[in-house]
Image (cartoon, rainbow over all chains, first blue to last red; front, side, top):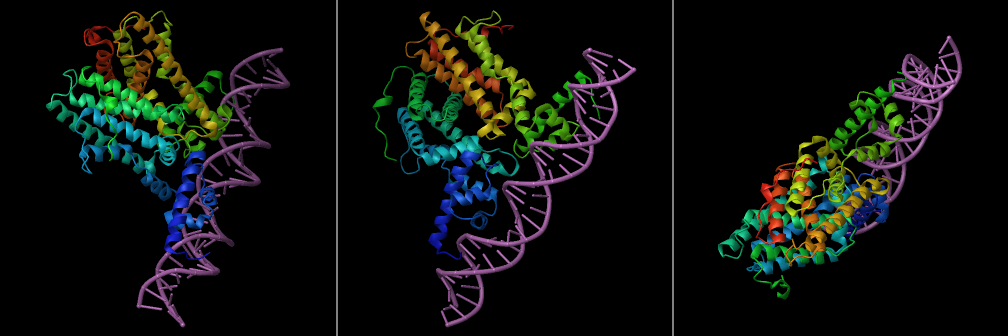
Length: 220
Length: 220
DNA sequence: TTATATACATACGGCCACGTATATATTCAA
DNA sequence: TTGAATATATACGTGGCCGTATGTATATAA
């Protein structure tokens, strides 16, 4: 065929990414051929090479499409959008909401599965892994800052140091997410996260205040 | 060459598995060729095909080599070897010890990295994933049983249900392990696990008894 | 002692997927 | 209106890797 309009070209680009998502999920990144991806998108390998160069380019473009919950959390904890959480229960509520968004979006679910279980992070694939590593580190730092401020306000039980709490919480979330993906979505991620965070909150703040469930979801 | 003695044959088999471990780690399972594995072991593809049939056979044999900490934990919690843990701190101490064994054994570390980050669990590769899934489920069940007995003895704070505690603990451990592998061994897994389990223990049992660090490692 | 199974090495054939080159038909800018 | 850039499809060549077949020397059993 021939030159499409700019919009049509963007549409095939998106179709290719959608197709790559499905084919990568089913066959794994390395066993998936560019031809299979192209066919699934209703075109040929020519289109793939034009838009992404090679398979690595396609993979990295797909990776950029994935909104990391860690980045969302950083934005939230930085107060971008004028919605900085002030209380501990509010922040925990927000994390539960973020997991619910992730759980509800089959797009993100598939993409995350591809990135965590359908590719081999080696050599040129490393950038995608680095992105998640950096996002993890950034999130842990923001959590640390948040807990430090909370400690200054006297909201944290003296049994917990802020850095301990940050690492603990991060490991807990990432563990629940890993298991959720491993189980193939057997249980509800957000429900499990909310339960665990509720228990953690009681530990962290002392059993006195139990107001987790009563806080309404913030709009941002 | 020709027929080696039975022992020599076993040695080349082990050499092939060692080589596969390294090559898979560096290049990923799918990009690694059987020739590369064979050369690294000092022989040719003939030996690989003789001992393992094909790459899938090699991969599954390698997987069986990996001692899962989940299976270890099941044995411990079942009291196999006459060493059933009776107190909560003792059990937590044991988990820390298990993580230390894992951390110290570069063999297991590499293998675990291969299984979690260097292969795509799809189609025929699934058996290896299933093994870990089943081990996870089994471990969670044993933890549940243990916590139920502990609750009956009144060792658990009423804020925690046994099943909540089991899921929580399991997620925490698996999260720490995941992050440890992701970070490339930046921090000490066992130290981090011990710290987190100590904090968790205080939550679970109420802050009253703090005897975690004083219990000596059991010999089994 | 000898036949046979064993434990590999080597050789052969073939496919699949990839990259590149080229063809082609539009669109868009001038 | 026309040339050039664009957005693909098609064609071509090639290399890597795999499975299988076959060669072969030796351990081991009878």
